Amino acid sequence: MSAVRPPPLHFDTPRLRLFVPGPEHAERLLDYALRNREHLRRWEPRRGPEYWTLGHWRLQLEAVRAEAERGDGYRTAIVSLEDRSGPVLGIANLSQIVRGASQSAVLGYSVDAEHEGLGVMREALAGLVRFGFDVLGLHRVQALHRPENLRSARLLEALGFEREGLARAALYIDGAWRDHVLTALVDPRGLPPPT
Image (cartoon, rainbow, N blue to C red):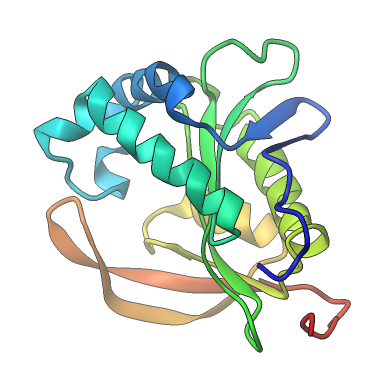
């Protein structure tokens, strides 16, 4: 990232805190993964046995923190602003950040089964996209969703993402190559990339 300082490792929305977790949060992220194992199975890649271990999460979150500090990605855990030490409610990521003429990133997310349909993800993603535009200096954020994932389709549409096409066999998810709908949101200000 071309900024002098790395971005902050957390920010708040009216009800939520989004923060870049580090190894010290491994137990909380493993708990989220275990609680939502069945809920998220059809939307995520198959996971090997190491994924469900504390050791895996410590190493993973060390890499997540370093990625944010370099400005290459901004992967966040979502918690209640009123109970910041409570359970993780979801995950929201801006990954694959590309600088230069592109100034783009890929949006990814998942929400806890018990918090689905409560507006948590809409609030979190609206905040994360705004953070991407205003703080990270992004111009374009794209997101993929499976055609049958109508919840994601409605969420992205509500956030202003526009459908750009169908990516055939784009990701290996739940044991097969799956088609994904490609959507994107462009910062309407059209600011030039930093020099």
